Image (cartoon, rainbow, N blue to C red; front, side, top):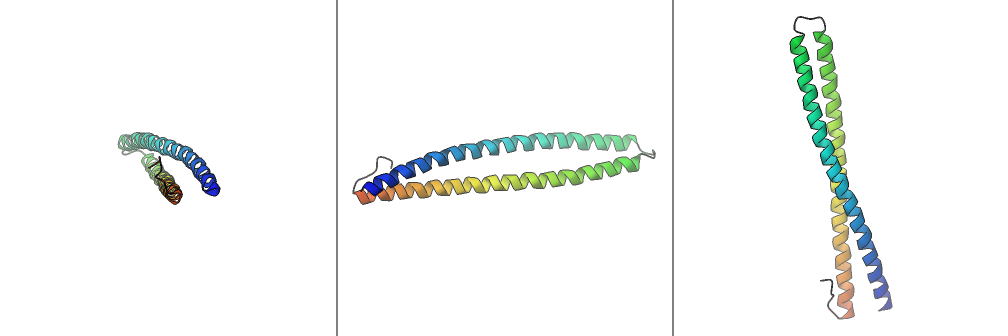
Length: 123
């Protein structure tokens, strides 16, 4: 019985810590979503700028230079998009882990109460 009460306290502390980690994860997800929106907005502006610059440079010797800059910019954007996606995937996996861990702790706590022979006030 004493071990079960001790384990229940540990579970409660783990749930509190997990809650803090989940909040932090949610903040990071929101920040990433905001950064993605800002990134795509800036990216669209940049692409329009390059298109207007290339159109204005038709017949100029600089058109190749501007076209190369646009290509380089797109390659960098693709790399950044991959990095954003990797970060998003990591945060999503972390969120799933936290949810699974939380469920596991609630099940364990419920089992402790079941062994004590009473229903939990936590149910």
